[in-house]
Image (cartoon, rainbow, N blue to C red; front, side):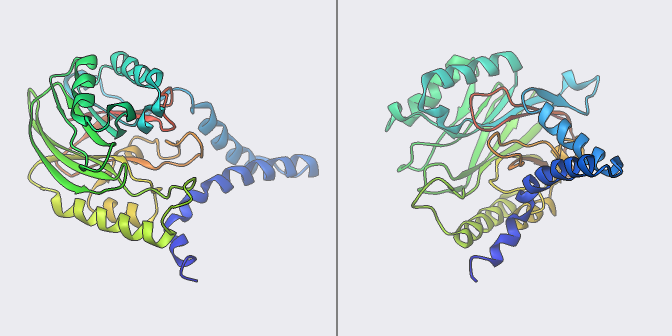
Length: 299
């Protein structure tokens, strides 16, 4: 029974079943010649979700957005251990023109153990002046941030000996403001890994990591929390963060859209505190990763 109770923490992931069931209900009503109003509504939602999986979507923009700091957050998936994926990410950055980039699962096997040169070379390839990448000494991968504005302080939130789990807080001074960007990658369920942790162990680790985040947050600064949380909206971990921060994806009307390409669920999030406004949020599924990129502007 110990493995059943934690399932409550990930129940929102079963939105997939809602999607499939809405299609089945619609087909059933067609066959049985029943009223189609409600099934049509459900099917319309499904259609919107899947039509927008392969492009960028924005439901909220601002004519003054050009004056705000543009941020891109993406789990690059270790660049698929392929130089072509690495180049594709660089091309996407060149096309999207963000000013701050928060990456998760950043790193490349062939650079081990010289992780510093990987980040330095990447910085030069994308033409950014500032960066931070300091994974645990036993790790190849971690979170990385690149900025066109000075990063005046970086503070570790958690940094574990797993390959990707990490959280860092970065204070960045733009032309008009000071922003704290918290880049996160929470413990993964590693469904394809035979040595994965139990469900209960994963949830407990995620809770500890989130409490470290809440402890590190300085409410006196504009703050954005972004990254791969490996947890869907409505889960216990998500709700713990949402009590303290606002969900920018929800505010933008993008909450129904997935960020994971293999399953129609949203596990990548962008949060902000009360001092911060996020506008022009959008998602871009044209990435070489199994995650969608999230782009937004910080006011």
